Image (tube, rainbow, N blue to C red):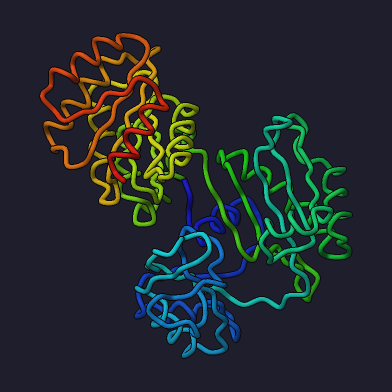
Length: 396
């Protein structure tokens, strides 16, 4: 689960991380009052969407020469003007795709005098089975570009889960950044605090870009991106309240209600598969034959008839879907249950696009019999290769 920057900073502030004063607003009428709560005279007006690259983004409605989704303001009047420009308009960044995201919230923050910009993130390093810091002196830039062009400028430090962030770990981070004075002193509390926040709240990603050294020598979290492990949210009722469903795909929200692993994509062939690996293979073979998958949808190993029907309805609700491929290998999941769910869903919502079904494994013959006797326009496939060729030909 992703949250907004202002929410991420609230979480980190609760663990003692240094953040600037700021106020979140949802209407232009709130902009002036929000700015007056801050020291000034420099303010930063930030679009709050679940996507990176906001500062370099462009608003669809404002033309190519308009400023991006993060703007400086040197007066309260300028804060209000930026709010009028940004709220309700569509911000397109490298991470939103061409459709962009509508800006429904702004974060008005006190400005900072920046001496240096650094990069810091925490993530689960699965190669060592530990939470790791990924740090670089190249803050404020796309870390992917840094990794590609100057990988030697990235340092990874895995943390021993029993010891936590030790003095030696902090010293290594301080040395990698080249910190001294007040910044080096701040590091002694900041990096253990970031690690504790990550572990305590079951984050899957914590990215601070940039982490700044201010002209007074102190450290500050200038931007923060946080994602939480959705499988651990049952432990965090307070974190669940931070969810902003307006930032999520409606189909993904519906899928979460049925405990379906569903991710919307940009293609035109809907996929319903059991097992993440099989789903990836199914999407790959669709691409191999020249088309693009419209979604990743894993119904899991123990899905019920109702769950399968829900998945099918979610897939058919996507207007971009021109054909559907159901690919089931029956192990724990029985093919007859899949067949019954597909038939029930088709009878409820109708079938307006070609449907190809490949069933193999437990009760596969019974599943095929259910489909064949349903009276529906369903094309059976012998194997995955055959299924992919048939669905691609059907939508060509």
